[in-house]
Image (tube, rainbow over all chains, first blue to last red; front, side, top):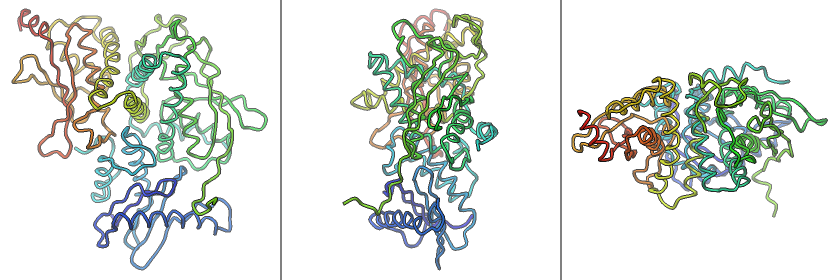
Length: 144
Length: 185
Length: 196
């Protein structure tokens, strides 16, 4: 599986609700990550204005020298984006899996308040398993 | 164009399921709890709707993540998707959509089967209870998260002697997208 | 009163309808969202974690009563358990299968207390998607299931106090859940007299 450096989740108001890095050499500290997320949120919105055709859904892929950035925005306005190695493959699939993990281990958690920062152990657990282990989508209760 | 019934079946086939009795009995426990806590039937109805709303605003993301549905082009399509895919994916039942008004902003969602209510009978003291009102809240909450403000209410209820469960679903307005850099100062 | 599951519609009186085999299903997600909302609702009605536990237990209790009636009728031809091990086995296998689709992982008798038994599960279905915040200490949403078990036991004539606990397991990243069942004195005594 391609190297994923970090994952951001932004709520519909542009607030960073989750940030995790998976061993990138340049880890972001909290303030940095908050700021970056906020700027990305605005950039994403602006990008839709540039579109010459209607119904543009914003930046999905950004390519740079040392990394790629893949962004997925749900129809509910939440954004999941990852910074990966250049030429990373399978990231669309990865982002969809992250969305499912979010729907399961964040949204079904009665102790999670919507739009707030995500602090759900099971989400961390399954996310790490998936990204580090490169496994297929774990079906329920599979930390056996 | 309405999506075929297949996506609902496909989505339902792939998800993990539980015994409906656990679900039905848990819902019964919820209603019982509310009746004990709130006493007034109207308050219970309202609370069921609120609880449904709280569920709906979360459930929509699971639906979008797993049902493989693209953005609906109009409210007609939305209603069809709820009836054929949404209800199927979560409750294992399919609904029908009918009785559209002239400008296609209002319709009925009809369910023959409803796993919330197996073997429930409303006692004399609870005749005004909208037992399944949670469903109205779920639909309303879910649609609000995809920018549709709606109103949902039961107009027919088997527990009150009708032939089927009928929810009247009305589109009030499309909510505009909030752009982050356009501040009204 | 809810007594079971069935889809037949031609009976006018609800109690005349067949109760069905209990094989209908809904998505796990539907249950999980409903349960999550129940927990959230209960949180608004209590002041602390201990009270939340009690409230969830009492929600489950009513389900236990109904499950006993339903299962006795459907699975056991209305035969009644009179022995402790019999009712525990019933909970561990029949009740668990009906609710969760499998028998419980284990049933054990406490080595320290004569009146205590434990039913354990690697992961309770109700806890599947739930991460309890650290500031809630040892709280376990399995209190709901503890309530169900207590409901079954009490209405079967075996009054007991049932509570849910997380128990760390060596070599495993996540703790399992143990339901601690403490039978009342009269039950233990009665069972002893019956030849326990």
